[in-house]
Length: 196
Image 1 (cartoon, rainbow, N blue to C red):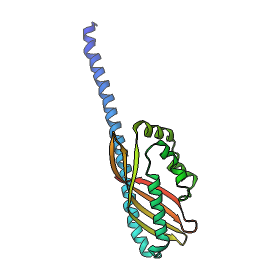
Image 2 (image 1 turned 45 degrees about the vertical axis):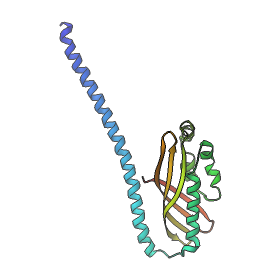
Image 3 (image 1 turned 135 degrees about the horizontal axis):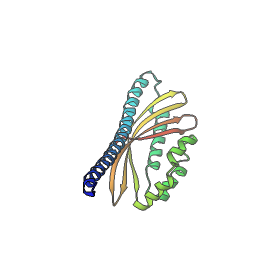
Image 4 (image 1 turned 30 degrees about the vertical axis):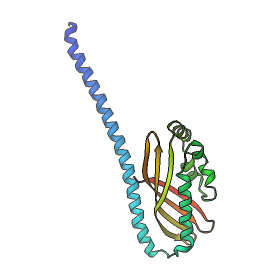
């Protein structure tokens, strides 16, 4: 067999191999996009479900005057949001937990998820390298339901601006689901989901 007859066969094999690799890459990108879309859809669905259940629960839950524990709970959410979502550099980012000591009393798992993720050093490096910052804007809405006489559940939508001078600042809305302990005056659970 001469080498010229092998060339088309080898070229065809290489073309098929490259096509398979590109198809795999495309499937991987599509899968990653679908995962991101699914997470966003789940967060939005949870928010809608919380809003629906909150309105239903509000009808059967005891009514708490806005001027008492509910307003204290909403103030704690505002304090948390303004401190948690405001930092101008890595040092301010790292101090957020200490600055919130008068506002929150979280479980170890909640504390780790909010303040000590597995990639905390990578996040600090990103903030330093890209000059990232975040600015709390406001609590757009906050709904409260008394889950029992000692606990108030809140769902709040918070407006935040994040980015850098180089990358630009982008407005975002996040959903905070939090629990306020009436007896201690602390937020005892905080979960954050990005909405937009």
